[in-house]
Each structure stands twice: as C-alpha cells, then as structure tokens.
Image (tube, rainbow, N blue to C red; front, side):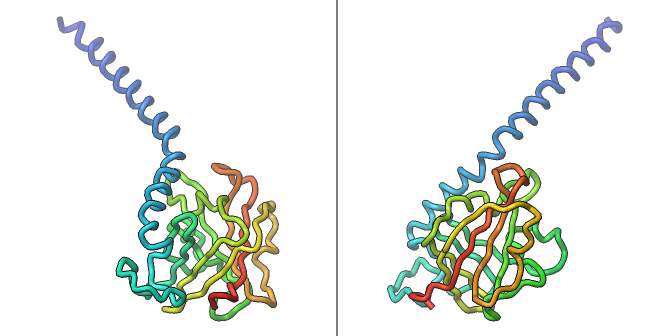
Length: 202
C-alpha cells in the first residue's frame, strides 16, 4: 500500500497540471473576445442617454439620466461607448492605465495637435481602444477638459508605421489625434484617427 501512494500523488499532480493548462489556454483564447462583449454591454447602457453620459452644452433636453460635466479630464466617443479618464504625465506606464495624453503635445484649450493614445488589447491591462477601428468620418468625439466641453468630428482614419512620429507633431490648426496599435492583437502598425473641432457644436 505504501508503494502506491507516490504513484497516486504523481497521477493527481498530472491531472492538476492538465486542468491548469486547459484553463490557461481557455483564458488565452477567450480574453481577446471579452472587450467585444463589454462593448455590447456598454452600447446598450448608453442608448438611454443618446450616447453621451454627461450633460452637453448642445443638449437642451432635460434628460435626468445624464450626469453633470465631469471635473476630471475625459474622452468620450459615443459610437464605441467609450468614456475614459485622460491620464497626463511623462511616464510611459500611464499607457497601461487607459487613455494617455502624449507629453509635449497640446491640450484642447491651447489648440494645436492634442494627441491621445491607448492600448488596443493587452492581457495585463485595459483594452482602451479595442474598437477604435469602428470610427469613420463624421463620428463624434468629445473631450471634457478642466470642466469644459470640446466637440470634435472625425475627419479621417489612416494606418501608419510605428516610426511615423509626425502624427504627434504640432499643427497650426486645432486637431485631435488618437492612435493605437493595429492589426488587433499586434503592434505591427498604428491606427490613427484625426478629428477637427465640430463647428456646428462649438
């Protein structure tokens, strides 16, 4: 009997390792799909407020479902149900927290080129711009900055190489540049969204 115990323990450990491998592989396969499911849930939630979770200067209706304009800096993209805090600072690890305002670029009140970036998908961090590829010309983008609303309209999207640092260069005109990695689940290129102030709303 005593000789069979080590064999039983080894068999138990083998089964435990098999289960662990199945669970890890399952997570690796399913995790990339979770942001898409989360998008569906968020889109359903924002339908009640016509895409904007906050009171807008352009909305004269008395919609009690909307919150007051936030005191923190936020990026809101109604089409992809995105509502995220904008982190500022020079530390690159801020990218792992969500939307990061690139250092040495402009801000909405200053005009010029305001540049925001975020991860498309990572296993260890937020999939901030997972659905950024769904944006097209004419889509609305709103930045709440220091208690003020700035409305933009997407003008174009493009794909560039990671070495295309010109997307962060200052501009004479006021624009918003948002970029993330593409294709999905790789860092081969950069998906860039260019938006300009919406003259009808500003």
